[in-house]
Image 1: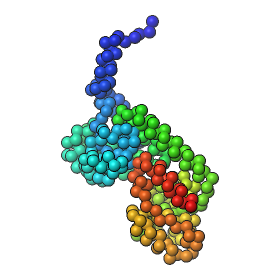
Image 2: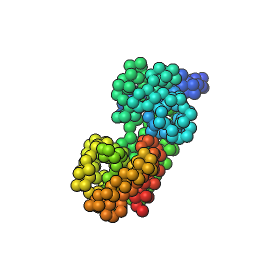
Image 3: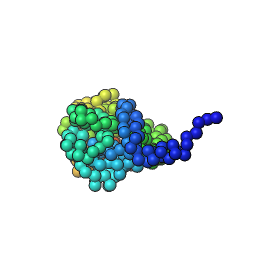
Image 4: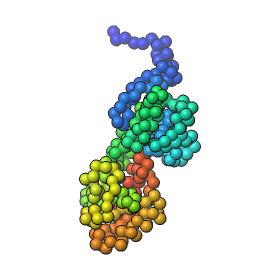
Length: 291
């Protein structure tokens, strides 16, 4: 006869699960590192705007007790106490919040700052997004971290469906090469490991600097003229900057993008936040490029 727990044992297990007091679980982050948490509903400090937005999408917004200076998505995130940013934060303020885990931006948060967290014994969860298709999985893992799997899984399913719909819609676009301009002096662009490269690929374009491994390389004007992209996308921090950069390119009439009038000034902060809103922002950009 199979063993069945007694009613008393079941009640004890339910109490422990509800309180989280004796819960212990291994959590795998976006970098495939395993960390150990001792509570099922941890207090979280997020040092990455994208991770903050992801945690809200995963249903864990109420568990975030501290976040970074630029975490303003969704609106509710703006009410959370600030502790610094990915490059520098106040460790004493972090400790005063008694977090059970700190979420950092892998590849973006200063490595020395991460070492400080680990030296004082704080579990560190590394958040990383390199492609749009990474977003749903990241939301699921953050749901596992926070103990909010039902909400996280539902959000991840919706995001997956939206990404797949975008890829199907523009699968046959084959729209040509595109320069993604991120700064003007010097000219900074996106390499193949920058998420924006996958964003424009979703829209049917080939990043003209897809061959460069650096996520944000500086390139020369001569290089751009030689590669002669079909489209130039100026991603300014505001509309004024994006428009000024676009006007600058129009002084080079030999460029194909200038001859065909395919210079697109664009401003959408969602494209730089590495959060779930990048999916909707990609849809908006694809629509603008298609027209």
